[in-house]
Image 1 (cartoon, rainbow, N blue to C red):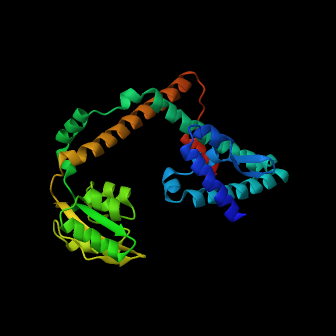
Image 2: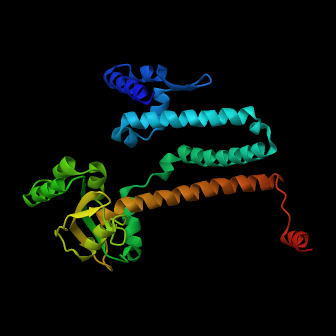
Image 3: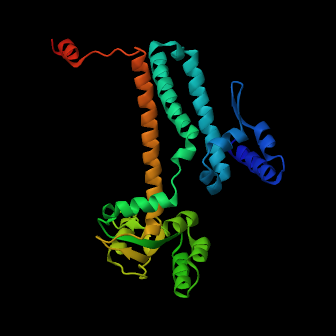
Length: 292
């Protein structure tokens, strides 16, 4: 069953990735069913994160389909024994419904006011100039390269090619076990406490290395690693504005969103209050109810 499923999905994927009618074909292709309910290949592809599909499409889809079957069996059984008719179910359902309504209201407010929430580069620069002191670094920050390979030979070859002057991007694409992630991380500054924090031996090397220095090759958790520091910002320095601008823009957008949604909800409250729709017990009455 397992091998037949994987073979079938393999050929379906080949068909989908070569066919001009990919979406309609995936919409029609059933890869699992339970008591008449069907899971199509497109349902699975829509739910599975794209990065998981890239890593191992066949096994990922098979595992998802198997989990879907187990879930449907459990749900069908719960319905057969009447769990959906119990007071506890309806109480929780109402709570989840209310939480979802609140969440979607906030989403709707944001969507309706997207233009107001945009942050220009000029706004971010002005904020930096007005609040420059708060951006002093409280610890050392570094920008570093980190390469992870599955074999020592690959790590050594990558190291030699960097020494020979090959482009970092090319070396990462050729040897890294996680090329997209490691390319992205190499463009960012990290506080030394968080640099390769999930790889303690690498972090320890980064703490004692100088600029452009490369670490020894480190074997950890079944893989080989080396790192190279490219830039350093010491505690008490002001970071480069180009590094800060995206973070300031993101923070200002968050603040605009918070003020907008809080203001909108506050207006709803005041409107309900003016319409005499609100009743609230006062504190002294509440105290007497609880403590007497």
